[in-house]
Length: 449
Image (tube, rainbow, N blue to C red; front, top):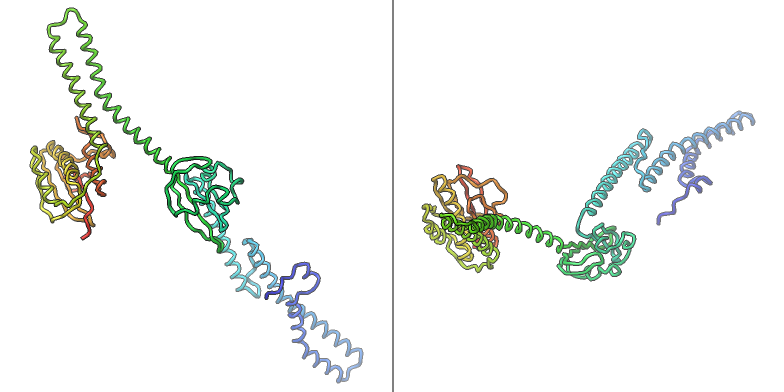
């Protein structure tokens, strides 16, 4: 068992045990010389006064040398003790002189102090960064100790509980109404009402260990707010598109209706009023028909049913679709036989849209269209390549109703992408690297061999 450490007051009252041993050891080293000197003085032809004078001088010199030896041994140890005490108290700024008798030990302690100081600085910087990160999170973060008492809560967590840090810190999970979440599964999605908010929340929890003791991390994310924001943005995009298309159709209809009303109100009617009236009605019918086609296209996109997969021979499907295009011959490049699991009607519609766009692009330049397929990384990829002017430089190519073609509906690419993603695949449209034109790719997962 380690003896208790003596205080500075005790050291001031008496010499510590180690120092007494050092001093006594120095005196014992000089004891044989003392005995020899005493024997010589007592047996030699010395008078009494000289004998005692020599003995006193020898004793004083011996005591002085023993004290000098004691200081030489003890003072460096005091320095080591002070440095170690500073390290224990967390003060890493003290340094010892490395030119003392314990220079190597002092050097190692100085290096240890520098390392600890550097690690403390890194820890403080990491703690500051962690605090700023937690404060910036929208998710509520709670940290509980082994007794399920709250030890950390970020601002989002305080807002969720509608309480300040002082009111929640140190309280148990049961007192905060979070006990059931800690007893539940590690990940769950639930509807719940908290003091500061209600809605749908994603709850995640995990075990923690700090200082050899367990704890729990609880993260609560308001997914309802995220979904509401995404829904709001989707409605805004939809309303912008619908408003644009409806205005494009209603503006000429309104203008032409006003013109026809003015024409009918004229007295007498002009001789060619029938032709003007018929032309106006044709324009109104044309714009109404265009608006109807637009709304019909939107309905197709919005009412796409879930796919009903069944085995399909990709080569036979591509060959059949290539023959349907009458405006321009589509060259089918032969490939390996691939069987995919897909909804035949939906996959046909997606490929027809890609072929339709490629043929329209090739017709503007007098080029051709080629279609091929291959296997790559567990996927079946169908590539439709054209010699047209290339895809427009826009990030909205797959946004519904976005189009750069006069009279286009903006549905083809969006519908093809929606069909491919419903089959756990995807669609891309990129410019060709080897020549002018574009290449559209549709990929689907292949069943395991």
